[in-house]
Length: 547
Image (cartoon, rainbow, N blue to C red; front, side):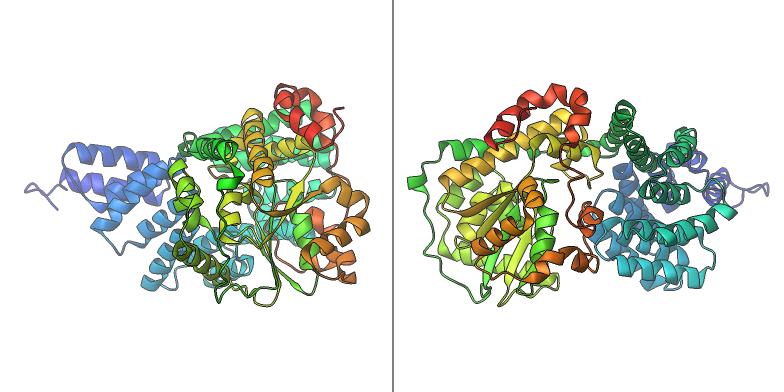
């Protein structure tokens, strides 16, 4: 586009400036030029691409996605746009759609190293398939030797797998070429914390935070979380709590869209429903058994996050007759219809046999979609927050066993606040102590009312009892589930080391039984003081010492 004078047209100048700014990584300047072009009535895919990249750099992932989607509509084969969509989707928690978008990008150019790297990053972020994430990073390095992002991804995987020598080795290679590489420093700090070099980790992380103004929110949250762990290791409790608070505030900003979610109203509606429920009105199905319900025993393992469910799941999974499914959501379709509103709960009361059969088929289909075959096995479905689905479980699976994990409420709420859980509508509440305590109180009400009013076969298992007298408690759990004792359960940590464990408790479980997490709340008693009145009734109810 050239003017009659031979000079470039102003529109061409703007588009060229945007392209140059994007290549230089100056997304703010690219977005400024895009706004100028929009003001002149220009519509071009690069304008939306520029704004998408800028919003992504600001952590405004919903706005970034909207602009990338418009750019894709105008130019469906722009791989940078497709990759931008995938990044935004992953940031917003839609990992399946992110992977599908990256697959579409690779269908256009299968040798694009940047897309293979992003695929590794999405898989690593989702945590479902670490082997595939590693393969994607290694493929990137084949296409682009020395790719720093993939090397840092491999370092992050090594941290996740607690392979500290590999984490350190990868981080040292990266830092030799880029002394300011944040992910490498994070990997080194993680290894230092694991080796109890808390002061070294603190110095490293504080130096990183000196550049916090130029650090994306999600990265700063990770750094603050590690700093809190380093400070906690030195018993600098007040400073550690302040660092956790800073971490969680960054997470609150990142996930501000969840601030007005229906998580609390949903659980409150369920509490009200159960309070008003007359057990005599609860109609249990004739329990027709579908062809998919051919398990030896169906077990739901639940309670509340950080209550010891991972330890229980790994103990059971070491039994040769048991197969488990750790934190996979297979009842979401039925929950949307029957468990997330007063109207749905009213329908659940009188659900038809046809709807029951359909919901059961959907559930077992979802189980098998994860590559799990439960037929003929004791099948353990472990999702801590399935407590809020107890009425639905009681209707769909009246013969199921419920294993309900308990731990000192003060340790649970503190751990939910301190540990870096994946943020969802429910766990968003954990980003403040009052929110975590409020959610715990409501969920425990649901658990208590369900055990009182619903025809469920439930065993309540205290974490502290299991740690104190493993043999007695583990054998009692076997008796409850109707399985014979297996000596392999005594050495559950050995088999746990060979499994992929999604929970943050993985490293603790692989160390075997220990009491490290018991009574941690006492060190943070001053910080917990504002929420203790909410937790005190449950402390008494569950038989824990008030002091």
